[in-house]
Length: 171
Image (tube, rainbow, N blue to C red; front, side, top):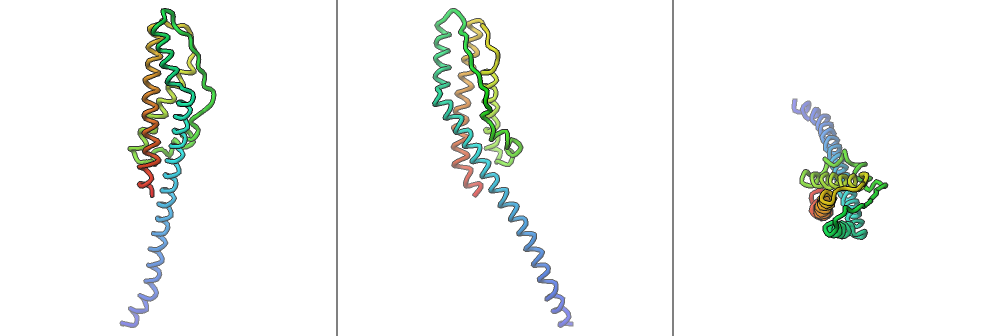
């Protein structure tokens, strides 16, 4: 009887150990791939947001909006201003929009907010421009300036979070 139990154990235990190892190995591989994917996504989004912030700074968009507000405030006539954005600056975000939920919620929410505000500003920039009443023109410019300030602050926080705090979570 003892011999028979030993024979069963010798045949069954390696089979069970192999099954457990296969199961754990498969889950470990999936977990490692998910971690790598999240880290890659975080770096790509941080890079795109940092590039957008650099463009805003180098092209002095905030300074120019503030100058336009000052000009409009001093003028009786409405300003006529034109902006046009023809290129998609959100390629990384758009290509990975379905994966944003893979980021921890505290990082995903500001990323989505950043791109929503940026798209609203671009929509305003591409809107047909005509002569508006001075007060309405001033209100629109002030709103755009405030949104741009919000965008810059949010973008700076996103870059800091995704390049700094997120990496230990994903390591």
